[in-house]
Image 1: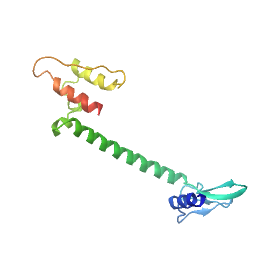
Image 2: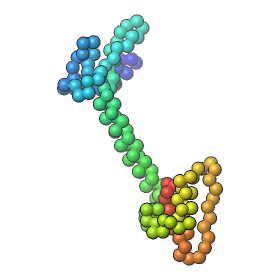
Image 3: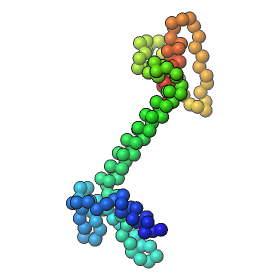
Image 4: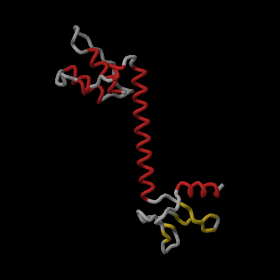
Length: 145
């Protein structure tokens, strides 16, 4: 079992050109000069275990962030497709608001900013044609997505 863990760690943190052995006998990264190994005592026996150096950890974090961003963007697209049957509604956002200083615009934006699934109440728009009820309802939906 331990051998599998070590082998997996070695595969994820290979020794590369430029890496070197330090005075303590451990391998160090040739780029960031941080250890790629550490010593651990298991059952009174000292073992050398591979670890990620600083630049590898930073690279891993960047990859993870990139993946999470792509995943989030895909979830947003999927939620918009589920919410709206037409592509026009999927693109209606507060950025397209031509009357950002009106009461309905401010109320709608504030509703999205302060929205809490546990405490937020329903919002009902009423009024005549052309007042922006549908536009702001779609903006709120897209804002919450």
